[in-house]
Length: 264
Image (cartoon, rainbow, N blue to C red; front, top):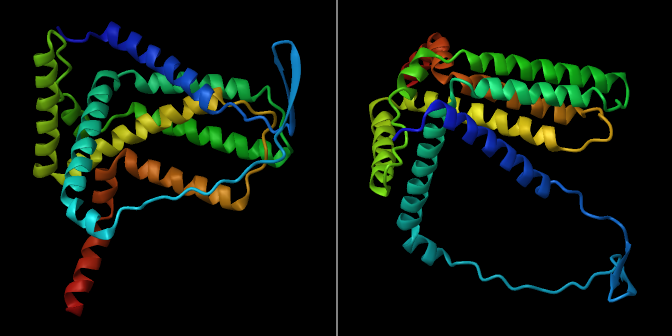
């Protein structure tokens, strides 16, 4: 049987809450207290974290010859794993692309509401926060409009058949072959689809992390952090529709090609 829309929505929501719980465990702040007290069998025991014992560890790095001998196997394994991960992400996106942007907007809205309850360091921090959230809202709205070139590819992805292990394996093999052929037929189309998937899922993941991260105050971003944020946003904009921007700079590409031809 095919996974229907209702079960997909339930699975997606369950996955989001699972990611939230896992993320909470990873972002728990470590204790910075130098002296800690523990009760063992009724006795109070104090631990001094201000001192530590350093031990040397010897790491045996693989030799260059061994790496060279296994280079082909490592490259093949990395390529196979990358292809499998791409297949899984593409299948997940094909099942959720009609409503995943709505989920992202919902999570972002909750985050914005919660952030309004947190004090700001100063007026500059409030302005930076507002500009950042406006940027995120703009990107989520952009994700609602899926390019036809991306949608034409997504609808060809086969949903998971879970009647048996064989049917499940056949679904994976079909989609892996589909991705392989997509790269072979048109590298630009393949990059356009995969970048769209990665950008969407990255933003959803970032919104989830922002939602579960505890903050006591909104601080001012430094110039370096602001530049980094702008560069990442530019990459997200381009990644949301690589094919459009590739065609947009076609005159520039032609000019560069003519210049190289004239110099050779």
